[in-house]
Length: 187
Ligand SMILES: *[C@@H]1O[C@H](CO)[C@@H](O)[C@H](O)[C@H]1NC(C)=O
Image (cartoon, rainbow, N blue to C red; front, top):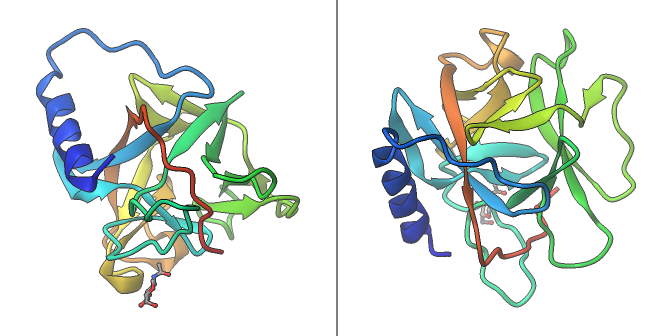
């Protein structure tokens, strides 16, 4: 799916807010994540995965996607409340974690393959609630002025996660991707 189409589809999704809530996206079904700040699309495309973190509005996430060009947004799927990145090769599975400890401050990251989890890292607890991504009921926030001028995504709960300033609550919404491009996201 092209970036433009993804952005357009997300606009279409917002304009149908008056309709009954759509059925939840099933486990194993791939989706992109779109970020809204104050009801407006943040950035022009989906959430990106790079450098073991999640971002919005990076010029390039620099993923490797087999024979396909990098669509510049990440593709995800849920499995038993774990949030996975959709890859294109066997092995090297990439999985999202959160760290809600005092030092983690709500950090959202990902591990690759058999890499171990840090002591306080949690992978299970992700849900789509009317397609909004939550971790154990908690929504996300975005912090500006991250690398390459992008926004970094964190769990809500700490005002200055990772000592980032001016973070703001966001609504991160899943949008099904019928023709997903599997990628390996840069560590
Ligand atoms: C992507 O690659 C470009 C060119 O090497 C670099 O400037 C940029 O910082 C990279 N972005 C990420 C997220 O790795």
